[in-house]
Amino acid sequence: MVEEKLFIANRFGEKLETLIRRPNKSGKFPAILFASGLGADLHEDGNSFDEISRLLVQKGFLTLQFSFAGCGKSEGNYAEMTFERQARQIEDVLTFLIKQNAVDVQRIGLIAQSCGAPSALLTELSGIKSLLFISGAFNTYANLKRKFIEKNAYNSNGISYYRRSNGKVDPIGSDFWKVLASYNEIKQAKKLTMPVFLATGDRDSYVYPEDAKCIYEAIPHKNKR
Image 1 (cartoon, rainbow, N blue to C red):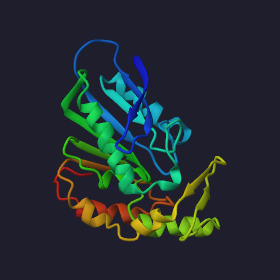
Image 2 (image 1 turned 180 degrees about the horizontal axis):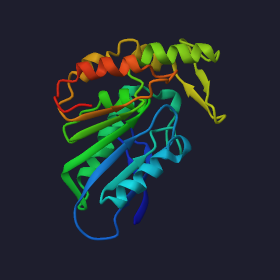
Image 3 (image 1 turned 45 degrees about the horizontal axis):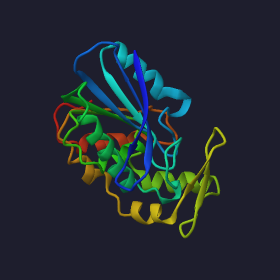
Image 4 (image 1 turned 120 degrees about the vertical axis):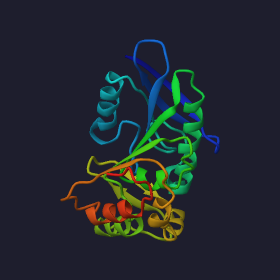
């Protein structure tokens, strides 16, 4: 396996830490791009993205993980984060990925976890051939507001400080809530024109299975599970 660490500049002038893995041989490989959840870096909680990436490389895939602006070693202020802003960053990283000589551009997939899902739904996905949502936070406004209120962290007019289970604190700016209030996940799901797999735990207390079922019904592509 070959690993390459680098930084990719997004359209906002921020450098995003990036990790590329591929088989140790020449050729063009199907590729997988990862989109992390709220406040997570490119490794995701428990380094789960690293585990998935290594398994994929063993199967002959090239993988690209990156940290959104303000996360991990990426530049930027996370308090400026909105899902629309993250969608533009996915597009920028995807543009970079498509230009790599080792990538089979006809076989590029995207894995989005938790709050990476709404960012992915807001992304121009014309270069993506398949999607995997892991515990996608689809009904995002209601779920996130509930979780922030539960932790005494909700502040619609200032900075909301959300403490994660690992002790990390994510600062969420007021623009996040203002923009998110008008987000329509069903409308976005109806735009998906590629195969989609939704993986959701039936006892998940954070991401309700019912929300995933609504997204599933809205997806127009017949190849969905």
